[in-house]
Image 1 (cartoon, rainbow, N blue to C red):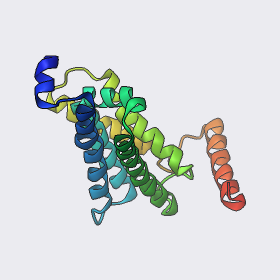
Image 2: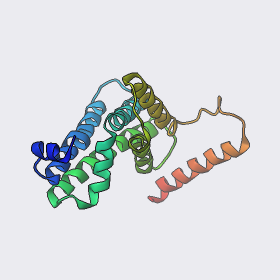
Image 3: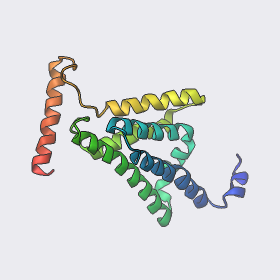
Length: 186
């Protein structure tokens, strides 16, 4: 679409950015909230659906994600607050699922906020490297990213884990660090 044609539909750059916040970020935030309200899902299933929704959105709208990210520092005040609110909502939704998974013993004892940010980054970064995808390819790619997101937080079953001493020591250190944070309130 040419610049004049774009400005025919959206009179200013701010109007264009406002549509991106509404049509991209707020839509994603609403989708995650809906998934979070779906009854009967385990934390792993819930997280997988959330990650797949975010990855699918980034794959389907790579220019939206990139333009919004590149212009975030220049958003007008009201729009910047709407953008920040949507991003906080997305982080909070995923963080809540990670915390639930940790409490239930499904996920490793991690810093839930850091895990949420890493998963979001994994999903949204596809906007920078994804190419033209058929709908089937996009669905497979989003599913693979979602699977990796869930795998990044799953608790390793020591009965089926490899007997690699270094990997087991790393897991034990992570668990001890988490216990220390709980005890000392860090």
